[in-house]
Length: 93
Image (cartoon, rainbow, N blue to C red; front, top):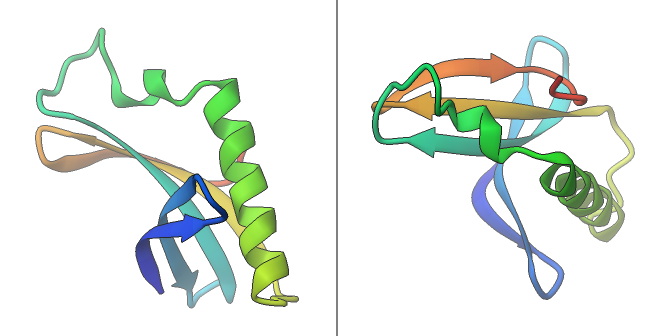
């Protein structure tokens, strides 16, 4: 459905996609690192402030598009150019 989707004056959703198996929209945050480092993992940049900002952006998008279906919010971690983890459904803990 879209990448780097602007929502409101200052927010952005990295990916909006349709999960055809579950028939829900997926709002995804992507965190990336150039190297695969066990200590400095991509998900470390997905703190509580970022999580709340993504929730707010998803709610805004839903309202703007009058979407009334199901949705979820995911975190996609990329390390060394490959998906290292895909966390489905917030919270990301």
